[in-house]
Image (tube, rainbow, N blue to C red):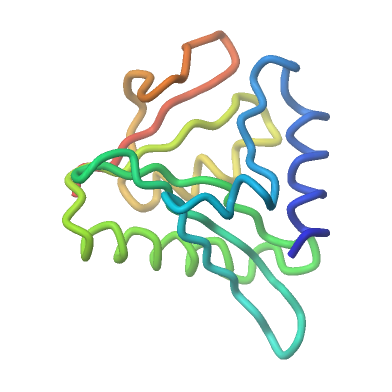
Length: 139
């Protein structure tokens, strides 16, 4: 899992302005307010996703990543569907996420929009910039 997260962080730093990288490393994912799920095939890690509790009625998707060897196999969609179901089970009324702009982010944006996420206002401690986008799903 640490290798996949390291690749995720490296990609974020490579494709994002320095002050616009909000991806979490393994130690941050261990915070009590964050739940992490992984997708496996045999002994191989295919993907990861996390849900951070923002309040009793809202959550944030964090650290969604599919291993490059498993792209376009439905891994990201399966993890996203699980996170959405968990957010509903917890009674959240809104699920949000922050992501970047540009070609490298288009596949992720397509995935989120496929499940009903729409662009909206910044949330939490995020500050809007020309680079980042904020997506929300009303549950």
